[in-house]
Image 1: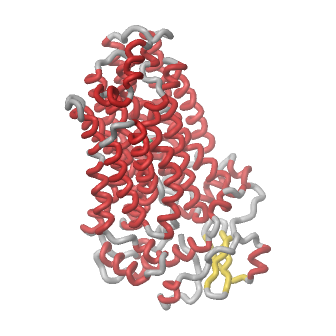
Image 2: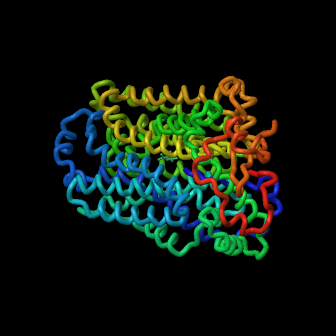
Image 3: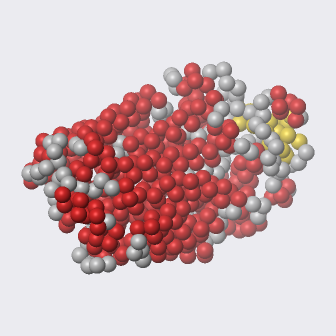
Length: 566
Ligand SMILES: OC[C@H]1O[C@](O)(CO)[C@@H](O)[C@@H]1O
């Protein structure tokens, strides 16, 4: 999930913000959540569709013939079949990077409209396909929609919602993803018997949230932050008044203007995150999504029907089992929302990780004891039931740990200057790794047999160690103090960043340059410097557009920035 732009998190003044949760905000949340629903729907729909006979007859007749002759492990080993699922994520990874730029330059609303449009076009392409090429092109277009929506909708939500709802919204996005997966699994269960176009209906129904996102974004306003960022102060103020339901929104408006000014000083966020000073943020933003995917979650979410057929279930039972898994996924994501601030991120990542690993080893052993290395035979009913139970426990562990925290932790640990790039790296890695797992799992199952579960379990063990030793606890730490905690107190990261310069940044305000410095508590302070001093201080590249936004002087307040809150 995104969260790429700079946001003022209230920085101590948030209690002064006026207004309440208005009907407009509720409507906005529903529409924006359809971005998450769509992401989930597209994740959850393909496994069931592939398992529908009429779909396979049309697109994979040879694989179907080979399927009947091969051993259980290799029934679905086909690159094109996997490409149907995974191509979406490859396009999505790169579209997320484009989405970052679009969100900033054209606005969150525009990016959501484009995302919705891609969903509609992609849905029409896949649902009307008669050739595999059209199917894959359709999935690529859907992927662009996913990339744009995963960047824009969480950002849109967090900027529109009252400040005290912002943390919860991060996990609500993941909840929307799991609801989308569950809806897809239920729909596949219903459409499997509609011959010969049940699969088309499954794929076409993604058009419903796609249309919701598209039409919703057309009628909704852009966020105040985005409007002000693009110089439309008055419009931004009006939107803020409307969504907060009060006339006087001065304090929040000032904070947004400050945040916009700060975001303009960070002219090269990618170069910033590559500095040694930000190595912890960079490494965590790469490794958390990598582990989130390589514990094998999407091997189950994408291919559960194939997995259950491999172990001897009929197609109908396989889809029913898949629905059960989807329900557990939704329910346990709700658990995460309830406990994340009580138990903390680290505890959940470790506990959830242990649960994942144990279940994967048990599932691997159960399959080994029935199918051995030959892949021939079926799993007896008690063992099959045990396998479903352990897959459900695995899903539960993921859903209250690495699932939602895989988005939350990388976004929480970013200081202001790496927030846009850090969350972009996280989304990119997540979608890229989803692509790799989606493209390889069925081949790995064929090559490694039951061992593939031991392989995922092994990666899970490394993920647990990483959580224990390298992930700092961010529970209840105000956002502006997290960097201090991550960088300066952590036993390992403090050595990595030792000797690096305190982050200095520069802001041009009219003709003067303002230096941004951190105090020991990690808070930012501003003072005036000349360009030469700024250079000596190691100020970031200031060749970009650092002019003060028109809106700033239009405010007629604070001729200079006295203190920066974030
Ligand atoms: O709930 C499972 C889903 O969650 C994700 O990891 C995203 O956070 C997806 O890749 C997966 O399909």
